[in-house]
Length: 173
Image 1: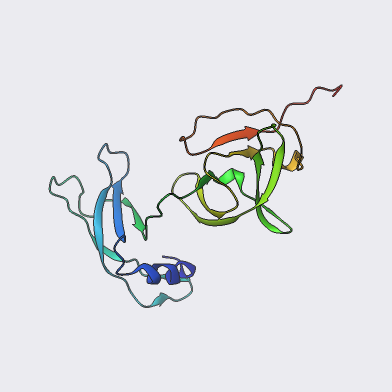
Image 2: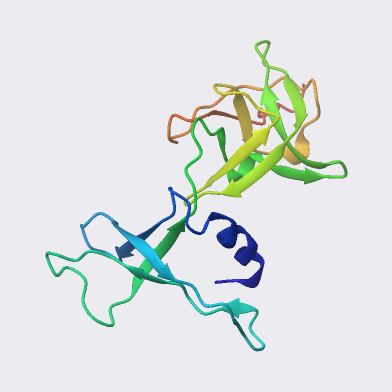
C-alpha cells in the first residue's frame, strides 16, 4: 500500500463499511468479500510503501489456490448517491479541477469541481460542481470555451452520466 494512502485507510479502519474484495484473474467467479484483520504500522525502506494489509476471504468452494495471484481491493466506505463522471471529463486548469457541462441550449458551461476518489474502472466521484443527470464533455476539451455550441453524442457507458464531444467543424463554418 502506498504511503500517501495510509491516512485515508487509517481513518476508515474499524468502520462499518470497510471490506476487502478478492478477485482472481480470468475466472468466472465474482469477487469475494472478506474482512481486514491486520495492517502493518511500518514502512518499507526506500519504497514508500507499507506492508500489505492482511485479510480473510471465504473460499468454501476452493476456487482460490495457495500462492495464486489475485486482485485485492480495499473498500473503505460506501458513498450513497455519489455523483460519478468519467475520468476523462475532469480537467485541471489554473483555477483547479473543472468540467464542461452541456446546458439545455446545447452550449457549454465551465464548472469548477471538487473531485473525490477515483473509482475502479473509469469513474471519479465529484463532491461539488455537477448535479445528477447533467451531460458532461469527455473528449476534446482543449478546443472548447464556455458558451461553445456542441452536439451531444452518447457513448456506451454506465447510465450514470450522458456525455458530449466537441462538434466537428466544416471548413466554411
